[in-house]
Picture 1 (cartoon, rainbow, N blue to C red):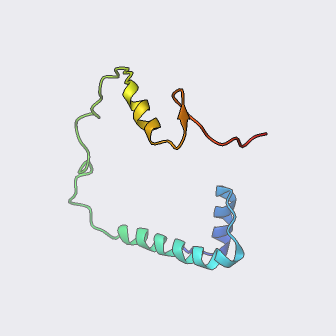
Picture 2: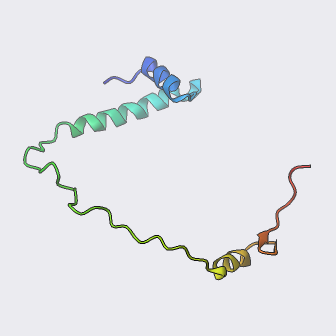
Picture 3: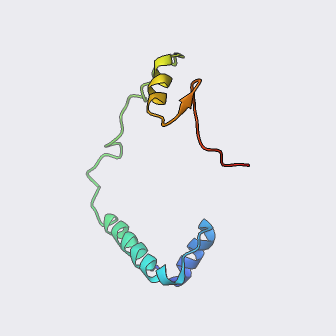
Length: 96
């Protein structure tokens, strides 16, 4: 796959991003390197590798969801705040 200005314009449209004119050549170069690397991966011989090589037969272990209320956690966090009162952070007023 060849990465060119037309493809970059299409990617901009699909991603709702804008690449400035002075960065276009750099982005095209970086995308070309990525595509080249992925193309190299397709050349690997994986015929002897089992398709489930990295898979685990066991499901993801779950922990029991037990609600906890530890008042020391909030006290520990507020201890590091510059200002706090009544279990709340005090911050400067930004809306008038």
